[in-house]
Each structure stands twice: as structure tokens, then as C-alpha cells.
Amino acid sequence: MGLADLHIHTIYSYDGTCSVPAVLKHVKTQTLLDVIAITDHDSIRGALEALDRASAYHLEVIPGCEVSTRDGHVLALFIEKPIPPHLSLKETVLRVGEQGGICIAAHPTAPGTSSLDFKTIQEALQDPDVRRILVGVEAFNGGLVYTRQNPMVEKQAQSLPLAMVGNSDAHILRMIGQGATHFPGNTAQELRHALETRSTAVFKGNGLSGLNVMRDYLPHFFLRKIGWVTHNPHPQAPLRFERLSRVMTSQ
Image: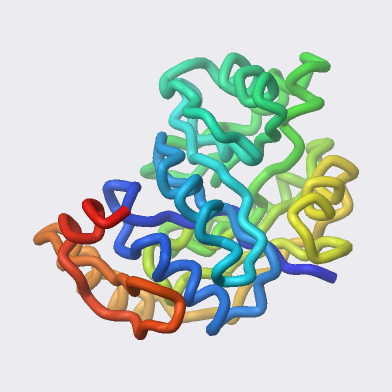
């Protein structure tokens, strides 16, 4: 069985703390993930950079984006062009389908975030075109703010005709893989087939405590706000803090 994390943020998200090379190096050296997706907020720049760099790290990368629809966030996967934000869920899903992509409902019903509710998801799935493209639901999200919500979401997600997905929603390196998806195979295309045939299973991570996560996240988030991020300039280089402006101009 393969393992995939399909919800990872980089410096192309306003709240991301890691460059694309830093994410790729961490995944390769510190996790057992076979496939990842870079899904920055309303941007595919990080995803395309990761796709371009993937071979140097011997990783399978799916280009994606966390799209802000009017109804809540949705993960768009296997896309290579931007999807406009603030459309309806249905219109967003159909635009992803025009690129040959697929969608996963991100952190449904999560409080304090822009999240889809289950009624909206169910209504959208009445459209056969949407049903062909919206193939999964994030039944487990490794983000700290979703800890209490996950059991209820997983229970409700079982009533939907969608693949059950676990993701980390990582904004720091340490969280990558703390929520992932088991699937038959180990490639991006095998993962896609598993999502489309609803043959996935949720992996709930290694149970990092909220206190440990906050101790790690807050310093990195503060450093991001003053212009420093985690980076490595090439696959053999160690991870280090680098000026965000320098990292962005070097891409």
C-alpha cells in the first residue's frame, strides 16, 4: 500500500513557512510518503515548482491548489492552470474537470475556517458531472484546529459516495504526513485510480500533541511574518532559514 499527503502548503501560501525545496527534502528524508500534492491557497506556483523539481528528489508530485470557493475550500488536484477563487462549489469543480483534474472536499464543517458543509457537498453531488470530478472528502485533517472535529467529520463522511482521505494540511515541515491516505500502489496515477474507485483509507499520523505542534509552528509563523522561511538551495544542502525575498527571486 502506498501513502500520500495531498494537502501541503509552501511559501506561496500567505501562512506557509517552507520553500518548495525544503518540503521536497523533508518528504524524501523524513517521511514514508510515496506521493504528495502541493496545494497552496489559490495559487499553483508552488505546485508547478514542485513538479519541476520532483525528479531531483525522486518523488511523485501532484500539482494542485486549495481553492477558496464561495461555499468553502476544495482541493483541486492534477491541474496546471489557476482556478479562479470565489466561484460556487459546482462551478469550481467543473473548471477543475475541464483541466482533467479531480477534487477533494477540504476540512468539511471545520469551525473558524472557510469550509464546505455536508449539505452543500451532497447537493453538488446530485450533478453527475460534479460526481465524476469531486471524488474525495477529507475525513481526517492533521491540522491542530481540526483535532476535535475529526471524529465527527469522519463519521459523517462515511455517508457520502466519496473516497475517504486523510491529509496533514501542513504549514510547517514537522506536520507533513501527520494525516495521510493509504492507497493500492505507489504512484500518482495509481492514487488517482484509487480515489476514483473509492479504494482509499485514512492514516491518522503519529499523534503529535497540540503543545508540541504549537511550539514548532508559532516560531516558524513569526519568522515568516518578518521575512524568514525554511529553505535548502539544492537537494544535498541542509535545511536553513533564508530570507523570503531571496528565495522568491531565486525561483
